[in-house]
Image (cartoon, rainbow, N blue to C red; front, side, top):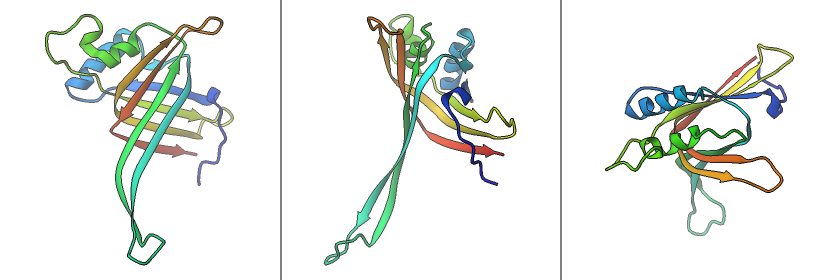
Length: 164
């Protein structure tokens, strides 16, 4: 049976996890030190998955004879109203505390976005982004609004799991 639940942002949660390897180890220490396994006070979460498509046109035909799939890209943004330097550290790695002498490892981690139906715990949707790296960090201090940070990210791939 397909999941037909309707969700709002209040039904969602964001968790970070790590895998194996030096990039994951770098992320693990930051996530644990900042208690960031569950991301709080997030808003405006956006995930975009795009697939390049190339159309093959035959001479004399106006319509494509075939569409050929190309590269797939996974990217997005997360806004957050809680500042503790954790997301900036996930972007800069060792470079967040001081200027490293040479090259350094950029942390990589997984993001799980879970939507759960409050009326039925058996119904949920989990989108997991694998090997995520942050690409941009923005810090906004508006005059009359909440102070916000925002990060952009790219991921190697995404998987989805519907339950219920």
